[in-house]
Image (cartoon, rainbow, N blue to C red; front, side, top):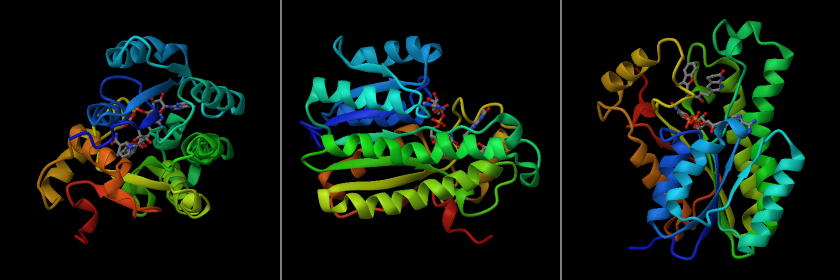
Length: 256
Ligand code: NAD
Ligand code: 0WE
């Protein structure tokens, strides 16, 4: 069944094969979508070329630092030239300076706060504004979030505050873009062992904690995030916008 046949999409946030963005991109591609990719910079260019290259030699791949307006403008100009229109956009990008994720939240510097919000939240607004003129047949914009936006997860710190902003931005964008049939939603994923998670002190213990406490008694698999991404991108989700969908084996419902 080709859920996304004829759909054109762009994916932000592939760093390597473990990236959540790559899991969702694969699900979109398998469902029949044609995709373009962006990567943060030269450091990740080879990785993305190797992965996205498997989707065909003419796959559009462009550098884009989401903190740079000129990068974003160039990406959508080139996508406009190549595709003419766009239906899907995945925002799977986050960053906070490492020291802000180590000490206490009280120590968060002005600069760490600014960077975390610029990369992880404002960028959704900037990308949605770039994509909207191309989404002439309606569209689906998806962001990735985490439970640390609503409850205190020790050390997630300023990223939790940035994710709260991302989720609120999702609702305001859904309101603005609804009349154009552009839907905006977030997937709130349980912990996944990716580049962004590795090196987080206690991450392995966090995986064990979820396994013990989530109703499904296990952690979420990348393919399951892909399946939800494909559903949210599909016409089956045509009446879903402004939502945060939890793909966390039920962890979020627990009170104790
Ligand atoms: P990842 O490291 O594979 O992906 C993060 C991406 O952000 C990378 O591709 C990186 O290049 C990109 N990025 C950072 N700064 C950027 C910039 N200035 N411009 C452009 N790109 C930039 O890790 P991931 O776990 O796949 O993270 C993807 C998303 O999923 C993030 O939003 C993250 O917060 C979210 N998330 C992750 C988990 C988890 O446990 N791994 C859980 C819930 C939500
Ligand atoms: O969103 C994230 C992590 C995002 C992230 C990761 C890093 C590591 C390297 C943002 N910025 C950086 N900066 C770096 O220098 N997750 C949901 C994964 C995650 O990160 C945590 C978690 C979980 C879960 C940090 C502390 C506690 C829990």
